[in-house]
Amino acid sequence: MTNTVISSASREVVIGFDRPFVMIGERINPTGRKLLAEEMKAGDFSRVEADAIAQVAGGAHMLDVNAGIPLADEPALLARAIQLVQAITDVPLSIDSSIIAALEAGLAVYQGKPLVNSVTGEDEVLERVLPLVAKYGAAVVAISNDETGISMDPDVRYAVAKKIVERAADHGIPYSDIVVDPLVMPIGALGQAGQQAFKLIRRLRDELKVNTTCGAGNVSFGLPNRQVITGTFLAMAIGAGMTSAITNPLHAEIKSAVMAADVLSGNDGDCAAWIKANRDPNAGGADREARDARRRRRPAGQ
Amino acid sequence: MTNTVISSASREVVIGFDRPFVMIGERINPTGRKLLAEEMKAGDFSRVEADAIAQVAGGAHMLDVNAGIPLADEPALLARAIQLVQAITDVPLSIDSSIIAALEAGLAVYQGKPLVNSVTGEDEVLERVLPLVAKYGAAVVAISNDETGISMDPDVRYAVAKKIVERAADHGIPYSDIVVDPLVMPIGALGQAGQQAFKLIRRLRDELKVNTTCGAGNVSFGLPNRQVITGTFLAMAIGAGMTSAITNPLHAEIKSAVMAADVLSGNDGDCAAWIKANRDPNAGGADREARDARRRRRPAGQ
Image 1: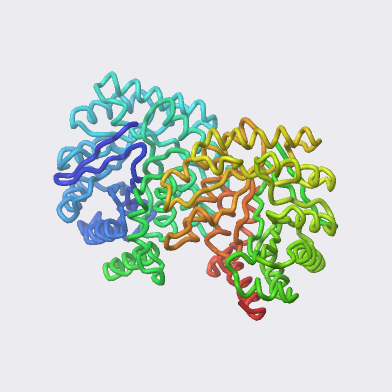
Image 2: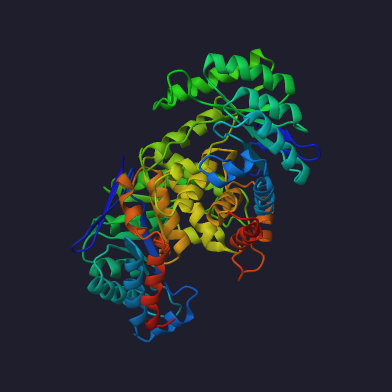
């Protein structure tokens, strides 16, 4: 039973075994969103704010914030985005960058205990990111690849995760503050991607006792009707023991699959959240909530 | 790797580890369908035929046929229903009755190797049903309850399943011809029903090496937006190793969850079935197929 506590100035979220699954909203990320990237670079954060509000209204328990824009001052942009999002929502954030200076800038302005996204298994990355995580008392996403890249062998990926957990302990970071991303490949390219992920998630939970997360959308890359594949993947991953994911709660299929999986895992006590979300039997329940959230979001553009 | 082969006169279906999930259409069952019960009792099987055609068009790999109508001549009705369904479809059938004389009447007219649904762990039932299964060379659904009722302890249910497999062996029926139903309780009444089922399914597969099935709809009994709960349950059960279910492929959420789970289990080679069903990105794919099947079915009544 491992609990990873993340917080904003006023709210705590627990990623944990035997708890409702934590959805981390993925939308605040300029990768592949040209308009958002241009706006952020020009200092216009209106879409970031709209995405934050819409995702929280849609059911996100946390938000991922990424400002990875080529040739931009990423540390400054990330810090600004974090401050703005924290000013208008109270959910805890995941500070997302592959640039260590940007992680540090984000940590410096963050109110509460954030999730740092991410550290990989390369020695050089570990030795730069882990001291930051320790200094700010944050939690961290550990991605199970290293100098040799992403191994196709789940045992190697498990070993990399184990190495990160051990190295973190040397910096005083407990395993309960590490959320491992097993790295989920697109199922359309690698037919064993699902089974590999489920097996690794189960092992990370049973043997390494850590919480887990992933960028869920990657699994359905290139396939038609993606949201059903992503939502079904999340349900099966929850069955295998996954406790959080970076995903889009505004997709009705994803949100309803996660909520149903919480019911079926016994983590939605008395099915209360399910019944509340589906109160009107003619309304489509969780589907309607997500649809409403999309509508609320529309005036802000995209 | 266990394969259970079921057949009609012209077609074989294999329920097996590492194979696409087998959906057994549940609709031909007068329980709770007053109009169907009245018609069947009066010798009108038009709705049985329409349900058979619609379910096969909707993606059922097999059909369950039940004629359990109070105060009716169930053996005669079941035999007649089986003959009619076999005359208009070529999918293998599950012969479903709690009355042994009805099972025997169904077996006597069936063309091919059917699935007998079901045998329970009571000694008296075992000693009457297993000889029939052996005589006709059928496969059989083993329901894991016995004289003491349905145990809430998954270990007891496992023990009952094991007893049935052992007793069947005494009658020359191999474990590969036994498909165990772990008995899934309504999650709204028992919050641990999902976890219990997943654990038992995994154990039945890993230790007893048998295929598994269940009446999937029971899990969502009493809850709103039932089809999403049932579909998500099936996906999670497939993740745990379940290989077939008696369910309704005409519900879009159920069919798409099963198809997505096949993709994610690596049992839909090159995602071919998924891509085919979702070919037109604007059409809703599997959803549309199921909708069309419902439309085709509508003129026949209900």
